[in-house]
Image (tube, rainbow, N blue to C red; front, side):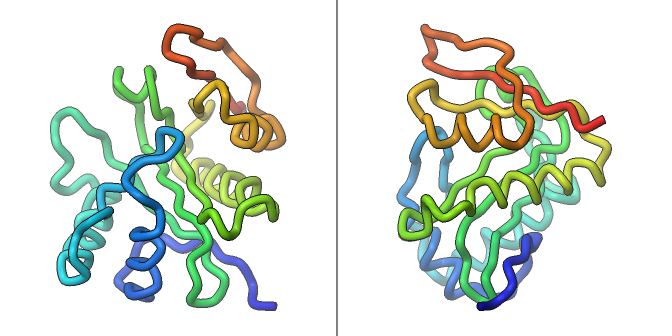
Length: 170
């Protein structure tokens, strides 16, 4: 079996990544997919924008720099994570520092736990601590993954139906 790696957004494996983004749909459990519905030709430009965003280039005033990663088995993408380098008010309400998504055909195999763990390691490299994660209150899978990675429930907003978890990496 091929080794699993967390790879920062690059212009490699674009056809496989495009296929995964197409399968993802436009939104699920709060994880949005801006690449959904774009043409394969426009996908290369989208990846260029992700790379720039990780460097703080072209970030809109209402956004923050973020690095996009893919959990890969060889050239096959299993999931995607986003690591926001800082928080703004919007991310404190919904989104937090890290968002992640696993392809439906690869779920319930431990990949959610792995992608979050590896993304937390990347947060360490950027000295992001503590780390905020949010998820839908009814998303028991994500709640369990966050808790198994050290997440402590700060609060649950019943009006927004969101949970707020902090992970202290010190």
